[in-house]
Length: 565
Image (cartoon, rainbow, N blue to C red; front, side, top):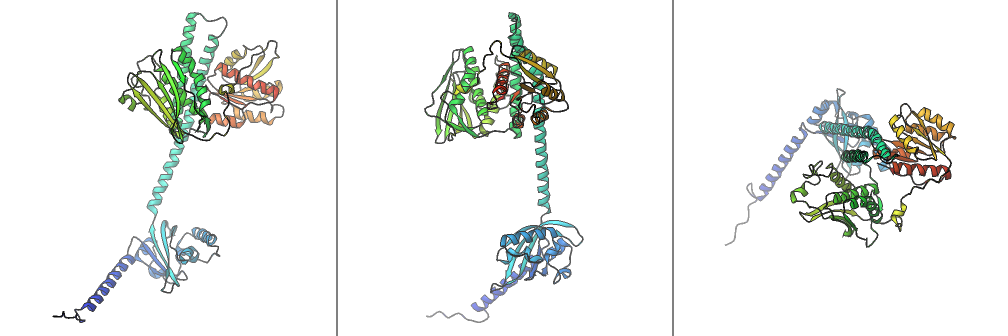
């Protein structure tokens, strides 16, 4: 028995298809009507010449015009900021290598080439007020691909712009606060270093003076120096931490020889290790490793780890330093000690500021900042720091640094690079040194240091104006210049002396309590022969002075160095 064929009447498939089409058209009409009557979007359609043909309810609400006031009368560009229209027209003309078209066409030119564009524009309302908007522009084409107009859909962008403005203002305020913080740190560092310069300087002179101090006096001087250097260390560490956290610490990234740096660090810590009966073992490098780092800051990191390994060790213990590849492009520097070790809880608290892990009541001085600064410096140089420790056995602090290619050959003897102070022969001619300094205690300190050399005589000037005149009249071989002087600053005095042919040849050493790296870099860049920070270390000061005297006699200038306390 055959199944009856489907009927093609009112209830058949054809009627059902037509009904579906009608429903789809009705829904499309409803959707179109909802879009065109939306109060949240401005919808504007134009003809191919850019004249407005459709202006929906949202556009009326946003711009204040009635549809009958704009349809067939104006272009959308007439309601935009004219400066933005000209700028957009010029930009599109350059991008498309096309002459600027009049009015709105230029604004929508990309859309006319078949692309949709989204612009940030400023709409001008009927009452003259304005607001930022985001506008999507689309070219409208017929079935043959011919351009028949443009469709613009816009939204009010005021809220987002307001948030952006607030964010920018907040960023500006934060940047100003950062600059103020850095300036405050620099100022405080200077103010703290100035009295320390007198304390430590005069204590060093008394300790090595004639007649020699009595045993009781020596003990007192030793305590003064110990406390003074410790206070200086605290100032330096707080300064470093503040600069790192404010994002103003400047680091260089250059190939640094680990062999050279470890040799220099070893020379600096071996004396303290001997005093505490700690053995030092530096494993020989199997190959010449170069890491990308800031040389000065890498030394600071390693010396801090070495000093800690010596300080928190048992008498008769050992410190072992080793280097090995930890990954194809990284090298690990390990500092192993035989100290009491750290518990898991202590390891978790290691890198917290001012946390000394219960050592506050012990016999070892410390700030609880050193490891925090060390960790931040390592990370800023692209490295990683970690620790492995066993209570009762000891600890291993390690630093992983990125390897890089060397730009210059490694010196056969790294320590041979260090400058040495030449002995002053008897009967040598006397050299004149001018010191421009407004602080009487600082001037007296340098006078006493220089007085120990029979080949030197010191002239003092209390301000830059007098110092400049003294330099012109007495022609000193070397000038020592404070930076923060009343009236003319030390940097400005340097410029004046450099511009004068009679004094331009004299090497000028900055002698300042401005110890922020940014200040030192600016000083050297300004043209100072050297930059010595207060408090003065007498031996370093005399070495720098000898270098300047040698330059004054030969005209050969060694590479400028930074003699920081």
